[in-house]
Image (cartoon, rainbow, N blue to C red):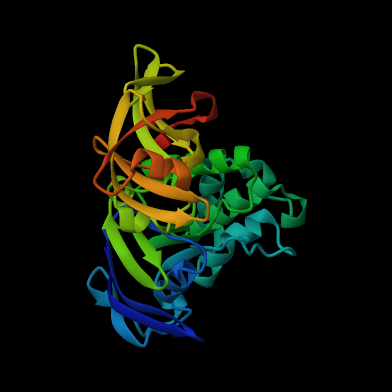
Length: 339
């Protein structure tokens, strides 16, 4: 288990203030928040790159706050993967094992086993400049996992991938976590990624932890949604091959769990719409008002012009009717329970 207690970190003019986080053994923790929130600083402080000004970092009850990175038994996957271009894939994967004294047949066996797990065994004699982005990511994850670390720390590992590769990478990470049961702390600003991968999440904003809990719980809170990407991300199930949301059919899929994604501008707000919600908060976006609307257990965002808001008397606490632009909705397989 990893415990971060009342952590304060000063990096230039930026600071992280009194962050507390608990990651259980085998859990997949997401650290989310907008750009500049301090996500990478927090991750690299846990890793040992930045020294905290106060607070503690404990691993299975052992205080590692003052230890150098190499003594913390963490593995790190940075956004650019940081592979050694002059080494083969085999040598890159084996690097951490060699640093820990690994040699001979045991080293070769462990490298080949993790290479097969990540499906990069055919690449072992190649060098990183000849690899695709997706292949580089798999090699970086193999290098991290082969040492059997206390935890793997990932800093936006899918950010540089195109949308199709990004989905494959998320699926790969979830599959590996399901199979290998490693502990992970994964930094992302992508809400969809957080929902797909996370067991728990911590939301950072300007160096402060606004909320910790399940991703679904976090996304139901207005104070978090105010500082999140303007997306609505909801979990649903297909029953009788239909996906419905708030009583509206939004797609046809085989039975299973899915994630529905739509933007605030895809929510039509006004009288006469069949579905009702309650406005719990709102904020000005120039000529638009961004409304936070509670519909059952879900909290969604929707835009309305300031003129229409005045016409309909839209205020916090008032009921509003909504409908969705169905052709704008994106549906993803919920990979969390796919394995």
